[in-house]
Length: 239
Image (cartoon, rainbow, N blue to C red; front, side):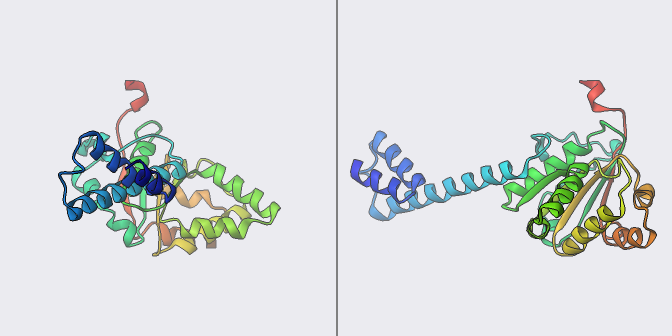
């Protein structure tokens, strides 16, 4: 058995190796048929790989908060309607390439809701990336200077769900507007984007100095999106 476990480990079948060790420790190796034993080993390997993938997706996403759908305090008065959120938790909006817009005052739970939706997406096997809007714009600027912008745009375009937090805290210059337009255009109706902002959607037009670009960008992210307008006092004060 020791030799078999070593072979499984060398073949990177850690789930099967762990299961075999457990069967040995509980003295069940002789009680199982070949078929039942193989089923247990294969299921253990599958579960281990799914767990590893989930952990990898969470790490790569770089969420602002560790959050989950189960931790959300559903409250229709605050704008957190349970039925709407649970419908989104199925991941259908990601498969359909739809966007989610979350607005509300500082501390009302926008980032937590966005992180919870992102964590749920990771659980379902979708790739997710969480960005502060200003830091992403700065990263794109540096990428242009280094000649790596195409690679970064490709990465953004391929990610199943991108979360943009703190959108609209400052107006964008012309190049930033072009970069944002390119990113949104690459994702429109193909991949999903969650945008969290202190500004109401009606004020988003002011973020963009170029009227033509503003029309094009907002047309792609506003009209077919799911919207949450969170209300109530800051949750940080309650803590």
